[in-house]
Length: 103
Length: 164
Figure 1: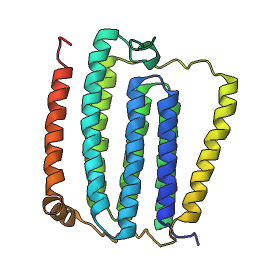
Figure 2 (figure 1 turned 90 degrees about the horizontal axis):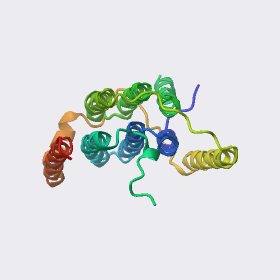
Figure 3 (figure 1 turned 180 degrees about the horizontal axis):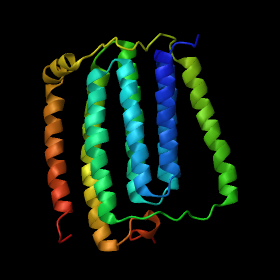
Figure 4 (figure 1 turned 60 degrees about the vertical axis):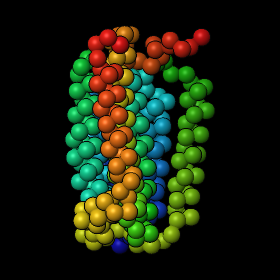
């Protein structure tokens, strides 16, 4: 029989997703994929919140996770708007070619 | 049953996440992200978060991913060329990465409480409880969120105009 799943398992999964998201942000050059990695990190946070919500038998974690999702939606909408404006001006989505503020 | 479901969907989530980082084409990354979102919804169900699982599927896998795919098609972003790998950087970074992952896994395995957390079907918080909590104790944050969304809508419209 396999060992029962505990809060710790969820924390390990969350840490793994956070790490993969951070690696994605550092490795990829496409801004769209970098924003997807940010979504991945937000999802890792949500796993933690819901897991601790279950552990503490309170509702606060889930409510907070819903607020995190809302903020993620707002961030995605504004970020993709910025991305479209950027693409219209620079004709690229690769972060290493967007170096206006670099000197 | 719970253990099998958790292991299956946790490995699907991690595998899709790794695939997201490794793919070169943004559309492939977006599809992998949908896989991550879907399996996370199942994991929320295992934890008893009925409402948050539905929100995850509808808002994340539905709305946000449609937005992402739409923008990828709009930008016509093709496959991205890999930068040339620096051997020294890889040699330093990979052990550091695995050390960090190992320390994190060890901490989570030893420092967390050994309670039996997962029980499929034992819902602790249905939509009714979540809704009641949102509209009583968390009414102010909820209303502030609506202002945030309004600002985000206005910002997106302003940013997507032609003359910026």
